[in-house]
Amino acid sequence: MTPDAATSPLTLVPVGWVVLAGAIVLGLAWLAAIVDGVATSRSEASPAGLGRPLREVARLMRQRRRTTVEADTPLWRTGSSGLLVIATLMVIVVPLGSWTVFDPPVGVVWFNAMDVCVWALVWLTGWGPNSAHGLVGGYRFLAQALGYELPLMFALVAPPIAAHSLRVGDVATAQHGLWFVVWMPVAFLVYLIGVLGFSVWGPFSAAVGADVAGGVEAELSGLDRLLFLTGRYALIAAGAAFAVPMFLGGGAGPLLPGWLWVLVKTIVVLTALVLVRRRLPLLRPDLFMEVGWLWLLPAALAQVLIVSVVAAWRG
Amino acid sequence: MFVDILFWVMAVVAVVMGAAVFVVDSMARATYALALSFVAVGVQVLLLHQDYVGVIVILMMVMEMAVMAVYMVMFMGMNPALMPMSMVHDKRKALAASTALFVTLAAGALLVPWPTRRGTPSADTTRALGEALMSSKMLVMTVVSPVMVATIVAGVVIASKRSRYDRLGDDLRGAPDDPQRGGVGR
Image (cartoon, rainbow over all chains, first blue to last red; front, side, top):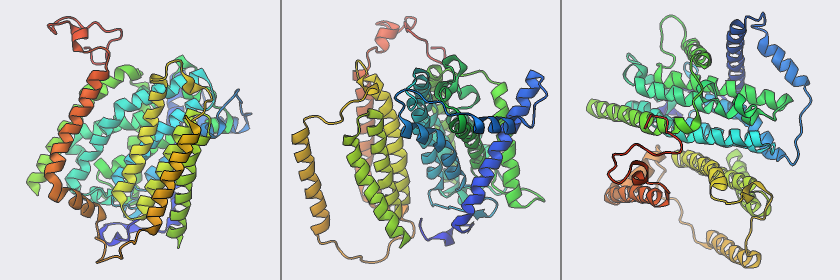
């Protein structure tokens, strides 16, 4: 974007490395699916475990595509295949140790813009098949998004204020000594809620709920379903990865190299987010709307205020 | 070279998708054709090194079009939004008016004597833009923002069917009479 890479603490690698970023996203999505698969197998006392995701991939790749009457195919396919693309676009601004593929001076806003694209994609996936269940799911997601997005935006505002920069690398390096998670716990928590929200996961999975026959997933089959499900896991992974430079000190840590610390921290956050599905009940979007606007938004604003005062006082 | 090609491709996408808004027969397609058109403009702004403005254009427009999908079912009575429908009203006049406007604007863009660059662009264009917008006009900005917030709040109050007096009674002391309770136990 801008040629002022000299002001960044990071090494910008050639754009071809975006393939590696994509591979890491897929690997993390795979890991998330395995964690969820093992947890599901344990709760059902079934012998399948580690192999669950692989079996599901093989099944979906062989499945015949379901067609519906008067489907809006271009919009439908855009929605179901887009999540994975968005997750990759989120991850490319996350520095892996001291390397980054894409280092815009407004990286934090970039992440935010990408997570807003999920609004469009999930709704399109629900709209496309011309199915009542899908449409209900799509609107459930938009209602939920109106509830989580504003708190998420303000949670994302706190670290850049403390770091005096919207560049992801600067935010990571500004935390030497004290990670932002320590003195902005509320922002971190609201951020994680937002990640669960845009990943349509756990308490925020009403849009794909069983009570509407799978909602936006209802008519998805075969490869489309595979891409959508992988995209959801990839979004949780991308959210976990972005939490590392924002709140968890980036690549900082003893003994291990920076890039490995980034991966380790990402995997810890990712595992926690995946497992939370079994611990929390589903939040109905209409009820969550008030929670988001009356509790989370003021909490995030108060956090931003405290961070601003501290940042101004430090100078 | 690459940037030039990308810029022109985005220009074509923006115009073609803008035109597609009026050609397609579904509100969903029209909405997202418009979104794509705006995203292409956002990418162009990014290519002009206005990083913040470019990313915000993409963010706002995608969000706006997603919310448009909510309005689509909220405000359209018997829900023609879900059926195929024409995206134009009063075709001939609209076509004449929009063609005239497009030609005027395009002619202006092509014929105006653009100034040549003086000095060099700032290293941090976002900051430069912010200072240009804010520093000498801070008073305007501080006045405008509360007025805008007040407008939004007033608009919502006027539009909402049930105010707090309907919910809680004239003395605001009654138990809320809601068809559906909110999520925080009010």
